[in-house]
Image (cartoon, rainbow, N blue to C red; front, side):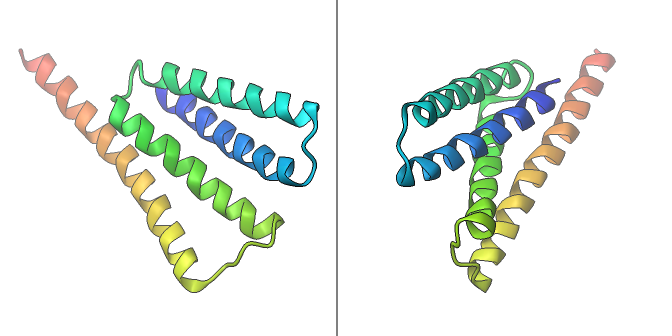
Length: 118
């Protein structure tokens, strides 16, 4: 469940950064409330994720999901530049997040195997 919670937290981080962008054009009380709600919910799911995923890994993955998602939405919906360098670094960021997930799963399996042997 930890990885699912972390995915939800990351999506909520994308949501609150998107709301932050929308607030630049139209700063209403409704958008401020939505921003606050998504921030609180994102941190809540991040905390749930850290119950089974190491904090350093969870935080890195959470920020990676949020940063990549916010950048992609910025390109698609807000006219931010999609230069070759930017796309390359986004791909590296996404690969890094995937790498952290897969190495964490491998490490967890090794730790579990060591526990079973003792």
